[in-house]
Length: 242
Image 1 (tube, rainbow, N blue to C red):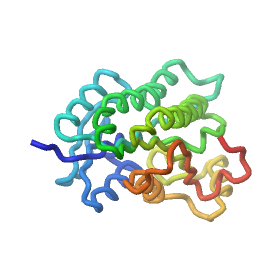
Image 2: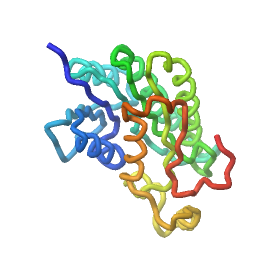
Image 3: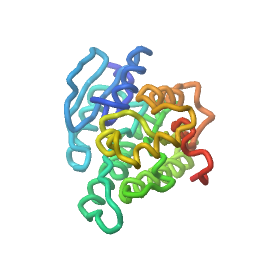
Image 4: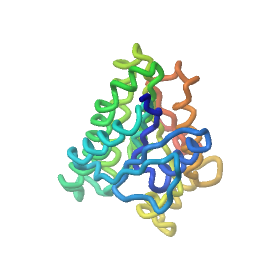
């Protein structure tokens, strides 16, 4: 029996991941959500799997469940964690946690789904980077791993292009998610400075990012690969490109 095709989104229980899932649902697509916490919502087109993606064994188990249910033809590596800290305060545990989530899990999931990404002829991978990849004070491990994810994106694009697979990255600027608001209190001077840098005059929304992700996921978007799109309201203008 032929399986349905599906898109795996990590961290789709809330925030940006949920917004991406909602856009794909509206397009009639099947979605697999892999998150450390199950969502407080459900939909017939969504299979939610609970897994701690900082654990390689749990990541592998969730990937296997996804493959048993669907042919995975697209992957959005969206799950993330900030672990704020400077070179003086960041710990090796912080580094290990964020490397596992941003880099190891992303690489592991691409490897796991590679057979069906290749077989469909239009495989899509979108990695969620960040404008912090250009440098951000008090985000040492976060900025480092997000920059690494951009490097992974460009390399995978070169390796997989001949198989019809595109690999691109989204680098959001300030987006009103629980993760951003927790790390950037509204009354903090640093937060006010961030918002002043947004030239469109407002903070971004999860749907702003989801719009960009669905562009990269479209079957028609087969001639764009290895790119990083800054969805930042112009906050990165004047900064050197990565």
